[in-house]
Length: 108
Length: 130
Image (cartoon, rainbow over all chains, first blue to last red; front, side):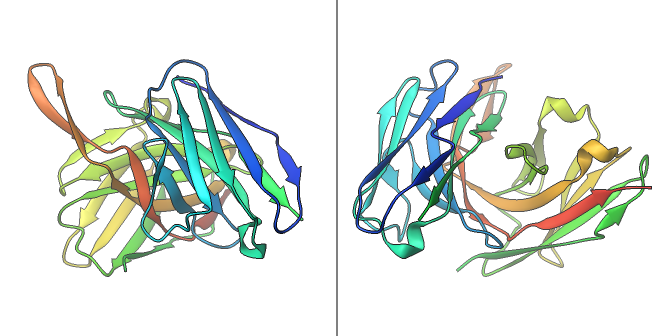
């Protein structure tokens, strides 16, 4: 099983700042990587897929980069609504396998 | 806009069967990929399994064949059955729609799978306790 490791676990930031969240895979996943945003009591939201493609309706301040084993989610100019937990997820084509990172919590 | 809403009992006894339903609105479930994902308290998200085009299913091997995902197209609902539960099955259970379809060749036949999950429900908490 491919293990996804996110860092840091918690990031304390202020609105308007730029942040980068890191996700590492235990072996190469090419660009088979997605990012999700999750707020308490809400449905998780797909932000990025294919490592760098923004999902429909996702603001341009969210961007993803990386390939192989190291990936970054960057949020420029943090808005109040961006404070949430962020998860990365890799997928293996066949047999299907989906594993998630443990999450990074963005707090004010 | 596709919306998913999970429902089911909040409490299940050990060794019994957990049954959850996901009601989908804003789209038909007769085609596409519908999945179940869970998150035990303090742990990471864990994929359970999915069903594609109302027929083809795949599961996380770690569930040791305890899980079944099915659809009821007349009700536009996706179901999860998890047998022989233990306290390790206590979790928030999410249904999600798979996206990013791709085909691969395996055992001489084309297989369809998905890359990520574009719509999720809010989740339902299930506790396993005597």
